[in-house]
Amino acid sequence: MTVKLTGRKLIKFLVFAIFICLGQSSIAAIEPDYFSEQVNSGELPAIDDRLPEKPLVMDEALGNSTPGQYGGRMRMLMAKDKDIRRMVVFGYSRIVGYNQNLELIADIVESFENNENKEFIFHLRKGHRWSDGEPFTSEDFKFFWIDVANNKDLNPFGPPKSLLVDGISPEVEFPDEYTVIYRWHSPNPYFLAELAGPRPLFIYEPAHYLRKYHPSYTDPAKLEENARESGKRNWAGVFLKKARQYKLTNPKLPSLQPWINTTKPPAERYIFKRNPYFHRVDINGRQMPYIDEVIINIVSGSLIPAKAGSGETDLQGHYLRLDNYTFLKAGEENNNFNVRLWKTVNGAHKALYPNLNSNDPVWRELVRDARFRQALSLGVDRHEINQVVYFGLSNESNNTVLPESPFHTQDLQSRYAVYDPEEANRLLDEISLTERNSKGLRLRPDGKPLEIIIHTAGESTEETDILELIHDSWLKLGIKIYTKPSQREVFRERVFSGDAMMSIWSGIENGLPTADMSPHELAPTRQDQFQWPRWGQYYETKGEVGEQPDLEGAIELFELNNQWRLTASSSEREKIWKKMLDIYCEQVYTIGIINSVPQPVVINSNLVNVPERAIYAWLPTSYFGVYHPDIFWLEN
Image (cartoon, rainbow, N blue to C red):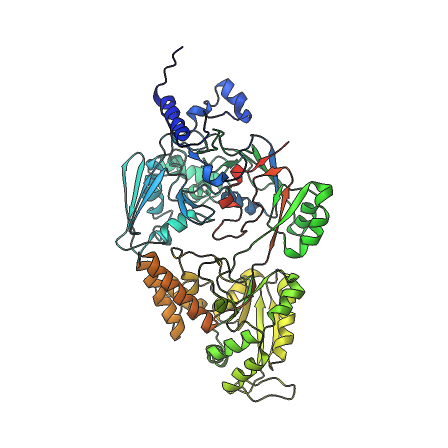
């Protein structure tokens, strides 16, 4: 018998034939049972007509993992309605994304070209569709660029900052249905990383769905009526509410993620159903995700460790801490789960931030002396903190790259980070802090006792425990500290305004950088860098607000960060990274305490393909994201 293949089916056959020729065991696409009824009734096309002509084959992501079977529900716990946005973080469907080696690879797009970080050409997958079955083409990118990013009602300040270089927008072209080109006058090495991030830069919108909320395509009178009915001021308010690809508050919004939210907030239980048009398959032709539904139950954050320990979740990392580990381990056998300790990658799990932009002129002058910051760091007994708070499981270190980083050296980890009260006292004497009061406290140059108020966000007893131990060790130097907790927004405002002398927070987000990842965290580039908020604000606002850096080391870091942006050579970028790390370490702009604190992750014993060892972090892994939960599957 002769079978004649034409059109899309012929192309799909040839694609799978190529996979076989390359030594892979791909076969024809396999329909999930979950959609059988819809396919049989004609409500949904068969899988051959739902996949792109060239789906993404998850051979690299699966690696040594086990190709799975369809079916089942995966339960997760979250503390707030807004936490459902983490499904975009975990789902990790990106134009380009990181693999487990932290290399950028094509995902939603079939391929891309990077020409010296000035021109980026994206080639889309023919036949790729949104979750509602409508084609995903360059028209969706065009709609975003022309009708959203450059619409004054939706974006009064123009396109997102990450699309601007020196304040200038890119040239964007759409030469055909499956090609998109972004081109800048000067390098934009941040672009691909923004697309691959945990909260990705969305440079596409489902045009077919959102046009009915846009005045370029719909009668303005009707839009005004929609606004009144929705309680919004104008059409733009309605549009923005409908278009939240990250927040997931509109269940009707088409998506490219592996699971689609079907529940309108607020709710106590959210159901995410598999995307029938998702663009990934395994090497056997099964469409990702393996798991049919993800169920998210909203409970109090304080109850999540207890509920995880009683087996009420299948995959849980958020709201669990190391001090929950013993309790969680005790519940493993009876409740059919296991607890794994994954790595965290902040340069410091907790760090102290002396505010170089303080309003107190005496304190500001004192804290800008590197010897003072070095003395404070030498006066922290990190070993004691590690043993008492972290059971000896963390890494005593500066706020710097982790031991697994190619940039790591023992010197970067331990310079001024070894407990040495004798050297600390010598440095304090050297900068003329020799006078003391009757209580043994050193006196500031203005005669006041050297007392430091450390601000916290008041969200963690862990910080309180750390600061109590630091209180005791700094008292031996003649310095007394007080802790001042406040709500997070108040805490941030006090730091930004200069009212805070010092604060405690987590360290640099990405302790595992490569040469091609931005070193901006080491330079004054953001207001939320608590050691120099006004300098960061100056950079963010192009000098309109804030203060220009006036400290030699900070200025040098600022200039090196700009050099990195303009440098295309990875070897030259590596040199810049190393120099910046050295300056940051020597100047002790932040006082790192410990890093590599293990993160407990609770995993149902029947959940397959979850890594034994992994990194749990916002950057660069998007928590579970780079491990692709769409390849996780449930036995039995």
